[in-house]
Structure formats: structure tokens, C-alpha cells
Image 1 (cartoon, helix red, strand yellow):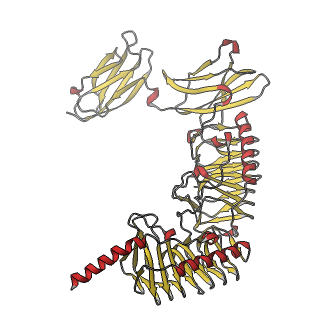
Image 2 (cartoon, one colour):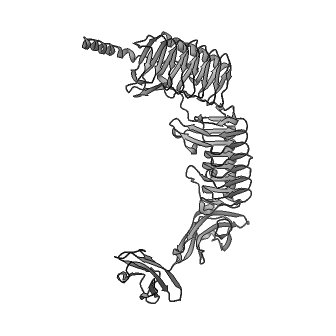
Image 3 (cartoon, helix red, strand yellow):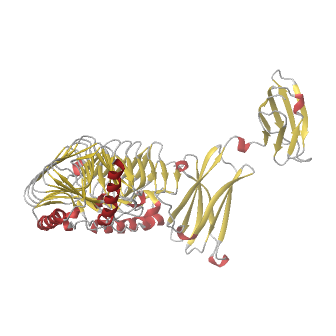
Length: 631
């Protein structure tokens, strides 16, 4: 008897499968753009909810929402159309014939296949319900509940094997109640009834009612992607031009650093002085005074600002003072029409498109709390994030910012521990940085200034050889070589007259510093044209440690079986005298060094510490310690 019943069940399912594949998703029309909507009733929020999608009512009020990643519609043309479209979608769901029937208890680990389910009476979803698309991304699940519908606390709907939330629909003929921390997926259409979404609930879908209030509290709700929904790519990115090479820049104002700041990218100002940056910590060019590069940057920055300023906004965030607080934004152009306070965390969700662009326009100043953080998710990239700020920018201690800040007519203050993957640029305003880390998000590829092919340096016989090469120069008078030990205060080493154009397309130059200091040596190259205008090129650093200036090197040290001595320029005519002593001061080895590399007789030096003295023919002495590990 049991086997007979199983056979009937299998046959029934077999014959139902063709019908299941015919389930069609209803056409939501303009209602599809809403995460929360009712044709008649109030829409209210308590706490901090994160909503992606429009919020609206065609007859009622909207209260309690902070910033919403969507447009707020209260009894306007959009809500009138959405109400009509929602009614048509409800009629489609109500009149479609079911091909599967289920008891009014869902979940408890059950797995359901695609189809149109009829459930009579008040329905509860408990624990986990799996919706299995069996590899068909177009599989549609429709649940027609002839009563109220509630999700118990921690209950969840899970989509498996290609099932998509955009293809799941719940038509409910009564109150919808989602208990705390439940996870719901799909579009809920309640007919003449309210929808309550409690604290901690995640809804990947929509909550729509033909007539009934919608109440949410501390929830995460977002419209599903796929199924023909618009692909969010954001606006076209601005062309930064030469400004793309700068990490920190002011078009008009001093650029001052204090503390141990690390920069990847150029640093400078087009009016004023750039001071306090350690060239050792800057991977890029420091422009201490205005030059041709800073002039180009200022011009290109203004063009980029003008583009961002005129870019039409998709979404206005209505509460600039509440910006952040775990807000989730998608690729759009956003507008905040007042001074903005960024607190806690902002999530930028690219929805899988690594080229998606985010533009945040702030008509006022921008300030952050300490530890304010921008988090990039689902493929978002810092190179595609832009902040247009009309006013001062104050990034507080230990904040983490992603993207390029384009500030207009405002000072920029980057405080201790701030980290920026992007740029901080202002058209006009003083610039201060204090022990920050900033790196431009992508390589800067622009031509070197005015035909400079390279500027480099290297150690050569305890000296520093500087070399540079240029293309044709017009009106070039001379080059100036400057040197610094701290990267900030430079002194002139030498001035070289430029070669004439007739000397060839490329001109090569060199200069040798015969007295480099131990430690970092910073060298800066500039050109002065025949009109007297000065342009600074990049700063390079050559580090001279104690060992680099030594005439001889012993290796390995400590040693076990063999000890080698390398002496620069050693020969029979340029010999050195080597003396090695033990810790008691007894002379162990005394010999002349006439070869560049000498293998010493380490067998006469058992394990212990030894001291050497190397005396060159000109009387210079080099001393040090050797350690034998013994054989």
C-alpha cells in the first residue's frame, strides 16, 4: 500500500512539472522601483533602517526615515502610477491558477521547487525554507496565502540552485508580520492589510500593500537585482587629467604636513608653499613651489569640479547630518543640500560591476567622526568614487576614506591616522595633513614635464652620480641641482647650462656629489628658462649607510668554514694591510691584501669574537668586529 501511494505521488509530480514551468512573474510596472509602498496608508520607520529602493505612499504620511538609498514619494505622480500598477500585479497574482498545494506551515528545513502554491488559512514560516530552482534562473515561485502570514524570529528563506529573489512572490490576504532577525526573500504583496517588519529583519525584495500601513524598525531592505531590473552603473566619471597624479593638492593655498605622513602620488600647491613632507615617505613628486605641473593640475581640477557640480543627481539624501550610520549606497549620483556629518560606516555596493561609478555631491562642508569608515563591497573600487564638496573638508582621526575628494573653495584638514585610498584636492583653500596615509587608487600615467625623460641617481665609488635626460627644450637657460638631508630644506649644489637644441633631440646630463652624507640624501632637479621662470621636477633619494661607505666588506659574518674579504680597487700597487686580533689583543693574522677578493685562513680562528684593522696605502683605517662559529 505504501509503495502504491509513493507511486501516485511521483506520477502526480511528474505530470505537474510541465505546468510548474509555465508560472509567470507578474508585471509590477513602476511599483518595482519601490522597496516599501502602500497605495493607502502610512509608511513609518523607527531606529536606523537601511533601505535601497524608493519609499512611498499614495495616501498617507511618511515618517521616521533617515537617509534612504532611493527617492521618497508622498502622494505624487509616481505614487499614483505605482498604485495602479500594484493593483494590476495583485490581480495577476490573485487570478493565476495554482498547481501545488501546501499546508499553512512553511519551513522547518523543507525544500520547495518552482511553481504556484496555494495555502489556505493563516500561515507561519518557521526555521528555514529552501527554494530550489534546479538550475533554472528563470524559475518562478508564487505563494498565494489565503490569510495572514508571519515569519517567526530567526526564520529564513534560502535560495538554492539558481533561485533568485526577483522571481519569488508572496500574495497575502491579511496582516504580514516579520519577527526580529528573520530573513525574507521575494516581493510581498499584501491585500488590504498592514505589513510589520521588525528589528533585525533582512528583506531582499519588496513590501507592498494595496491598502494598509507599513511599519519598519532597524531593518535592512533592498530591492532584488536581476530579472530585467536596471543595471546600475552610475554616471560617467570625471576626467581628472593631470590632477589624477596628485594625492594632495591645493589650487590656491599652503600645503603643510606635520607628523609622519606617507603618500603615494604627487603633492603640491599652485599658489603658496608645500612644506613638511618627507621625500623618503612620498612615492611621487613633491612640488615645493608652484611650477608647470601644479598649473596644469589646477586647471584640470577646476574642469573636473565643474563637471561634477553640473552632474544631475539621481537621489537626494535628505538628512546630511545623519550621513553614514551603516548606510548602503549603490552606483548613482547623490546629493546632500547642506553641511554633512559622516559618522560610523558607509557601504558602497557596486552590485558586481567593478566599473560602477559613485558620485556624492555635498553642497556644504564635510566633516567626519573619528573612525568613520567607507567600506567597498561587491566589486566597488576606490578609483570610481568621487566626493564633490562645496566647503571645508575635515577628516577626523583614524577615519578611512575611499575615493577622490574634490573640494571647492574650502580648506582641507586631514587629521592623525586618517587613511585615504584616493585623493584630496581643493580648488582654493589651505591644506593640512598630520600623520596620514594616502595613496592614489590607480597608476598615474602622464608625460614627464616639458620633455624630461628621466632623473636618477646611484652610488659610484662612495660618491653619488646624478643623471638626467631631456628632449628638446625651448627657452631653457640652465638646470639647478639641490640637495637636502631632511627632504624639506634644500641647498644648491651646482648649476649647469642647458645644451642648445642644435646639439640633438635628446640631451644627457650628469653631476657627481663627492660628499654625500651618511643616511638619506635628497636631490632635486629644476630648470630655469630664459625668462627666469623656474620649474621643479621630481625629488629622488639615495641612502648612504655606514657599510656603503666602507672600503672593505667581510662575508659571511658570522662564519663557520670560510671567511672572505672584498676590498674595493685592491691591487699590488694599491694594497692594504690587514690585522686581525682576538679578544685578548693578540695578533692572529697579519697580511697584505692585493686582490679584490681574498679567502682568509679561518682555521686558525676558533669560535669566538675577533677585531680587524684594515689600513690602506693612504693611511685610512677601517675597523670592525668578526664572529667565528667554529667548525
